Image (cartoon, rainbow, N blue to C red; front, side, top):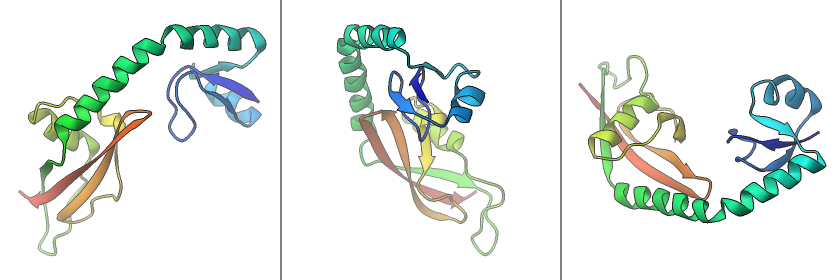
Length: 147
């Protein structure tokens, strides 16, 4: 089943991509949630026209994403967490905490665009990937320290 994505879907594709999915996934999840529409002849023409008109806007959005990545640079962020005697974290370090640390440095990033390369389980240094644009991904280093 071919569908056209109306929004970015993790591990599937980006907005306006034409992707092939299993019929049940498309019919039971993507279409009812409003994440996709059927890729028939008419919808393909409409999307092609929209993509053509939005091409110059996309360049600006990509430039803004690259500017954010350059602003973050190689900065290392510090996230405080409750840590036991063995160095293990009580609870979890979340993407929201990393987004707040970025915001404190003047960079506003949605927490949903951040993913940890390795889930923080103890105090130490970790990396996270920020998906700023489909062509701009940035690695961020952060340290988990005891409160």
